[in-house]
Image (tube, rainbow, N blue to C red; front, side, top):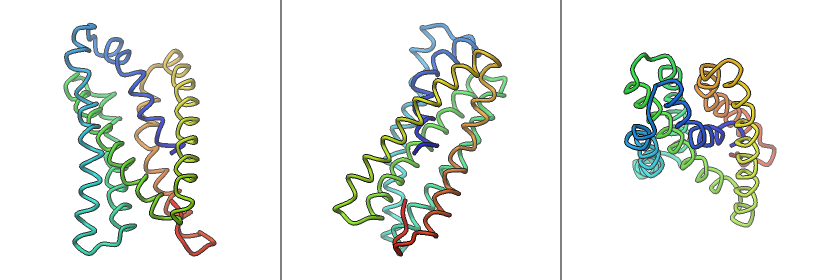
Length: 186
């Protein structure tokens, strides 16, 4: 979550500024259109959870189903690069919607994977620690994003966003395989 939660924080805090500065949106346009990516986020979480549950009912193991959806979400994140380089504001909004929908799909499956990977007596503690890591990552990333945006603009930030989930997925798979306790950790 240290690597992936910052994406939610970034768009929650920086999307209006991006739309105004880079896309020429007025405050009224931001209010009229800026909610669309967050609607995609509202669909991505429940949709990603429902799809992984559907896979489990079809015989997939819970871990395999959750990881498959997380990998799918991670492969959607490079839409952030298209968003920042597109000449069309509508394409940019659509790509940011894909990114936020994929982020929510990732989170729904990650949280469930965490709770399924440890004994019930430890699940709440691990979820709380992961939330703390996500919050720390979100705070640090937003402070850094502000400096980068002020110095060179939004392009580097969007390019980093594009690969955070793929990096997190690689870390998750590697650490899951090397778990000393025999249980794979999320």
